[in-house]
Every structure is written in C-alpha cells, then in structure tokens.
Image 1 (cartoon, rainbow, N blue to C red):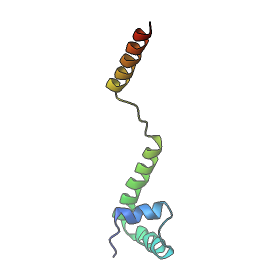
Image 2 (cartoon, rainbow, N blue to C red):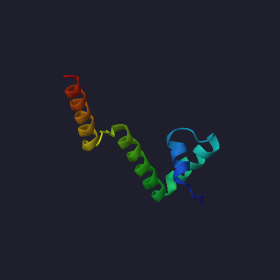
Image 3 (cartoon, one colour):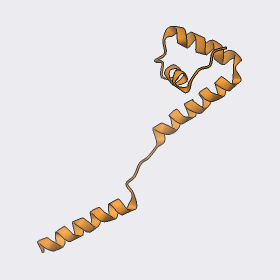
Image 4 (cartoon, rainbow, N blue to C red):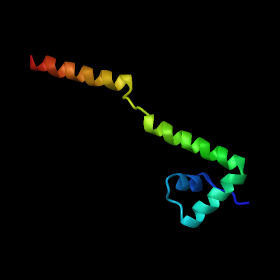
Length: 76
C-alpha cells in the first residue's frame, strides 16, 4: 500500500500526475476509503477556492475616503 501525499492527490486532481501515477492513484482509490475521503476534502477545497471573495478592510476604505475628503478640501 502506497502513502499518497496531498501534493500527489492535487497533481491527480489537476491532471498533472504522470500516467503511471494516475493509474496507481485510481487503483488505490478503489480500495482505500481514507484516500477517497482525503480526495473529497481536496475537491471541496477546490470548489471553495472558486467562490472566495476578497474585500478590503474597513479601515483601509475609510483611510482612502478621508484622504480624498482632505484633498478636495484643500482644493476649495
């Protein structure tokens, strides 16, 4: 029984593993439920990465607005 690392499984998921490694992982997935669980967690993480939304912190936005307000006051 081979121990596959998360990196091996990621290569498999992204179709970047060698053909030999892909076949070995497929065979291992058929008999190893823990490996299937690890793969499921990685697949779920991949899906969540597609939906991650980032936004600036509130204090950054407020600093920009304050700076803009100061600049417009100086021009008047």
